Image 1 (tube, one colour):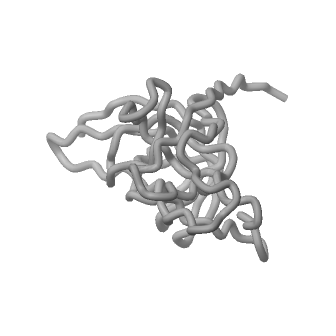
Image 2 (cartoon, one colour; image 1 turned 45 degrees about the horizontal axis):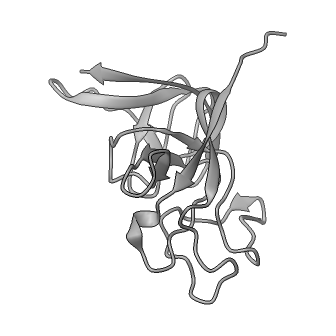
Length: 164
């Protein structure tokens, strides 16, 4: 059986400057952000945004669960609830997979072996369209298929820029 090396790095969450910050769900794509920290990360600005890596853990208040009934229940980018402990998510460390095999949340149907890009501001992944003269920030290649939005699949994280 072969083995692949994964590269993980820890980044500090910026939280888009919201009052209490934002929640980050496990296995969502993150973008680089240097607004407050040189080693900062944030949710993506939208489809095909800059890609930093995939969160390997959730950043949520202590009393919340990120997995229930066989599904991951956190939507990245959701506002941090007032009165939470800890009070804010800003500056919390999140481990990010930058290369190797990871799981990722799908935004919809994905075929095995598809190239993937960031789908939306929630950090989900979608199949890279092949629209001419467009540059795509590919996050990697799907190792599994997804049927529905919210499915969690494996991806070979190997980011590169691709021009259709």
